Length: 214
Ligand code: E4P
Image 1 (cartoon, rainbow, N blue to C red):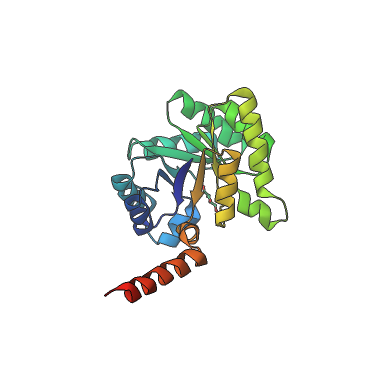
Image 2: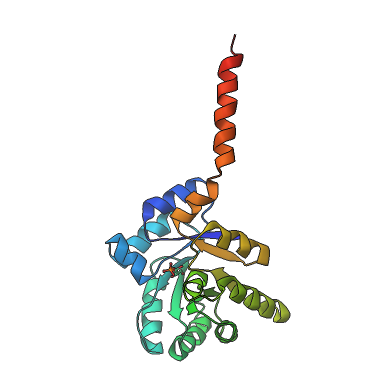
């Protein structure tokens, strides 16, 4: 299973790279806005430290505009993936970009039928948003399970990126379902390290070590 960092904060990415747990990065316009920086500047900086796929999101609403943006983003670095929204125009763009060998990540996927359409259009990745489904009292992980079953039935090459991850359980459940990738905010990775029994155990061992010193 691959871990992507779901952030536009370069320092967060750098720390995950140092730990060997950053296989790629996803950004979106909200994350870029939060970073307070220009999209190109941030993506270029990320590309200096991450060799895996880096998703940059197109904001055009028509296929032609998306393809134009995609061609520009793809010129920034060899590992750029173009995020396109799950719309008819988005899927048209996916098809054209596939022919141009520019990989796409279809974002804002909320149903298995959307994921199936994206895979048939030739998306390299689909991103089901589990947290946003949980927010409206729908089980986001059920969607991931459905998509994994469908993709396994037909050997689609499209990889599943579990997105809108809100807690470590989303990550472990994704792993249990065999999802290819989870894109994870840094604050969720921080929670994955932690266990009170680990902290308690370390404190106990250190105390006993001190006591055992002659
Ligand atoms: C990543 O590709 C998505 O844009 C991101 O995970 C969305 O997360 P959110 O629902 O917490 O905004």
